[in-house]
Length: 305
Ligand SMILES: Nc1nc2c(ncn2[C@@H]2O[C@H](COP(=O)(O)OP(=O)(O)OP(=O)(O)O)[C@@H](O)[C@H]2O)c(=O)[nH]1
Ligand SMILES: [Zn+2]
Picture 1: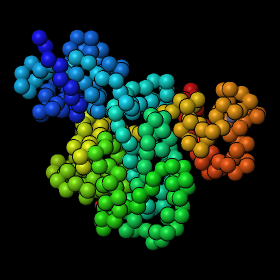
Picture 2: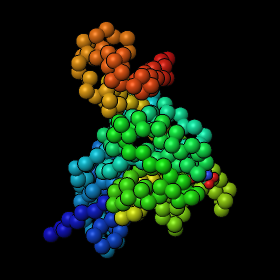
Picture 3: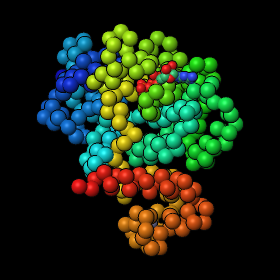
């Protein structure tokens, strides 16, 4: 009789998967139907809950992937119809930006839209506030994100400001930290959990190599939950979003979707557009609407032959 156990995929290593079971990590291969597929929904990713069968105390075989609660879907920048899941069951995206130099709000909108496209809650972290001259002006500027429902945290990996609030937010959850290079993601994580040993700066002093050398994906135990660490996240800032999905990635536009004259309205130049009407009435911020347009137009321009 075979005994099936349940576990969490915490590392993917090509053909093998490390599964956190009830009593330790079991290195698993794929069995049966799962093995014959190299891509697609049937391939386990970090965060997947799986059923596995043990063949020895430390080795096993994955029999099935349990239904995913969430899926972080990477869409090709040039062909957003092409998509693959790079992490399952994430609870949230933590989007980190530096408060200084002045962050580019368009870039922030884009990162948030990518999180929304996978249906994941996002929070915004503005790091390096030790360098900010006027914190209250900064808070005022970012109040608009709070209004949209994104919590905004102000942190410094140097002084420790805001770290406890961030700890509260990640405790017991599976989070992915994203954001441009150099904003202090590794520094923040190391400050929260000394011993984590993430590399800071762009050169690894030990190997002298650039840091972007990790090729495996893993969930790193963190504050009673996990951090998703995968090379698949590196270019998240330019992931594709299907044009017809984009408006729904802007929470303030959602109430107007489906109210335009044309059911396939992309809210650009079409007549009878409820979204543009809402912008004109001041119900949607023009700045955010311009970000929407820019994402759409940039994507279309990139795709043009
Ligand atoms: N003043 C100040 N500097 C910081 C802070 N956090 C990080 N830094 C510095 O910013 C630089 C980049 O920090 P990292 O933690 O490597 O940034 P990262 O976001 O992990 O960068 P990538 O790994 O390239 O994505 C380092 O020189 C840090 O010492 C902060 O809160 N305040
Ligand atoms: Zn419209």
